[in-house]
Amino acid sequence: PEKCAAQKALYANRRRVRGRRGRRLQRCRGEMVERTFAHMYETGGMRRVWVRGHENVRKRVLIQAAACNIGLLLRHQTGIGTPRSLQGRALSAICRLIDRLIDRWGRLRRAWGFKWTPTALVGSIAHRKAA
Image (cartoon, rainbow, N blue to C red; front, side, top):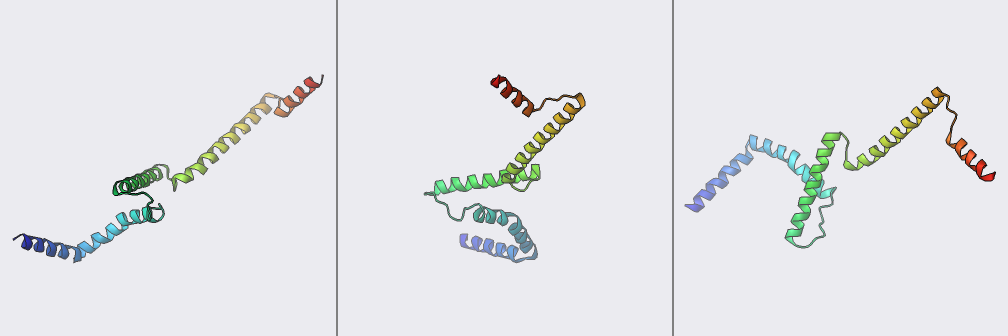
């Protein structure tokens, strides 16, 4: 009786998998789930794990999966490709901000008729030391 039930379950599963709907679901599964794992294992360096023991391997895979998920969330929120590309963007944004501040300072200085420049200050300090 137990063997008969297992055999019926096997045949029913085989029928579902080989049907049109089953093949369509398998394609979706391959596109969604397996692509993520392929990326984790190839690009993420999980093909070879240099830790010993099942428990340590399990921890390593969980950390890798969590990192992949965090990367996806960041990409979705910021619209930037990878977390590493944020480094270049942040530096670029800081440089743009400094450039704008310098530009605004120059405009204000010209508008107020202010003649002070850093080089003039350095020259006056050098002149005072010489005297």
